[in-house]
Image (cartoon, helix red, strand yellow):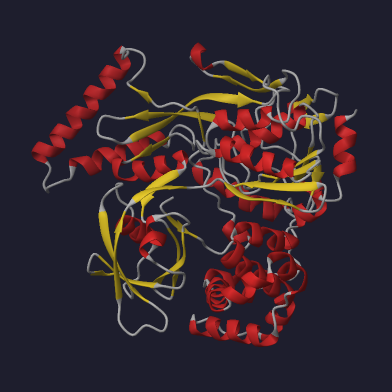
Amino acid sequence: MSIKNTPSQVRLPFLLAIAVAAGIFIGANVIGGGKDESADSRKSAFKFREILNYINSNYVDEVDQNKLVENAITSMLKELDPHTVYIPAEEQELSHAQLQGNFEGIGIEYNIFRDTIYVVAPLSGGPSEEVGLLTGDKIIKVNDELVAGIGIQNRGVLDRLRGPKGSVVTVTVLRKNTKDLLSFEITRDQIPQFSVDADYMINEEVGYIKINRFTSTTYNEFKVSLDKLLAQGMTKLVLDLTGNPGGYMDRAIRMADEFLPGDPMIVFTKGKEYRYNQEHRAGELGAFEKQPLIVLIDEGSASASEIVSGAIQDNDRGLIVGRRSFGKGLVQMPIELSDGSELRLTISRYYTPSGRSIQKSYEQGTDDYYGDIYGRFESGEMYHGDSIHVIDSLKFSTVKGRVVYGGGGIVPDVYVALDTVGSSSYLNKLFTSNSIREYALKYSDENKEKLTKMGFDTYFSSFDVTKPMLNELISIAKSNKIAFDQKQFEHSESLIKTYVKAQIARGIWNNNGFYPIWNQTNEIYREALGMFDKAKEIQSM
């Protein structure tokens, strides 16, 4: 992404409405309509054109025909499945760029604090870094248009700062300890987006890789990370797919192939059209085919994430740890339309190697489909593994005879309850107001030289968030209209200190500084580290 927003990443219930509507895609665009129109489809199309013409000629008020057509398309697709979607031309570029793993723009990581766009970091090697934008700069104007104090949202930032490679935009900033505004002419360029959030050694044996989505670059990024950790002595791996909503199917297949020896099934698909019935097997020699493997999933892991975890589970290759995944087992084909818009049409279902469809029901409509996540809180599933509802008629067996179930996501081998210890309304508000991120950015900016000299290992083991630091955070929160609550603060103080420390580390060492600290609060991660004996046991059954 050319401009990267970094909202606080607190893992709380109200943030679990995940964006999986995009679904999972075959890896190629298809232009055109496929089969010849049937008599029924010609009749229906004629009826629609007839009504539209009557409206245009005789309706009492002027109407926007394009808007009517767009609304009609959206309403029609609601009768299908939740993942068949129409993307208007003006949104297609952004959606496509997210899957391609790159944007064209100025290359900054930003956040919005108190109605002002702050530069969190100019991306390394990007055009903003080249002209001299700095961490902490406040963006006041873009091309002489005031953008501070106007209630700007993320979309407004993207619309103003993204643009085609080679185009020029003028960005005016207010810099700390500088009286006058500074203006920079920035020539936009292509900025890669990374789908590997972090890759580091947890200890001398165990490596960790977190994948945030499956884009066109994901497999190559993953392979670089895997080779890097192997060179550092990794003999065991934690692959973190929590919160990963999916993306390209072929990248998920290639990733799974790195772990599976021989040529076992990874995934197969079935559709109404024979050409959409395909089998995908392992076959390439992988770099991590025999070593112990643990895959982390949760309610935010969908589609391509479920293909990887399903292939590992059904082939008894590793241990799946966490909570039941989203349950998205449909495959979409992106179809480019004549006006630049796009139809993402569901053309098949995918099945794990044992024959499971993990697609959950959508018969009650889209709201109920996505509301299922909240239903898991109400049913107790997020806190008790025995509350997971499985359908006995959808019972399947792994290669070595372990029982697994279809019909609604991947049920992990080891269930981990959501940890709410230390949570509070006050903590939630610190995140939703961006107060923790704002304070951490300020602290890391003011202490960059000292922290860099300290080094991450020393910071990780000995840095402590002090009382004066917490008092300054509380003051920033008050300025963001968050009233202080002493009781809730004391209840959440340990978590607050960990989150602040992690966010400060991100400002100095990026995500490989952030996640080792942040993951100390991650109950799935903590549980997994003690499960490698069980992972070996499954592999050697």
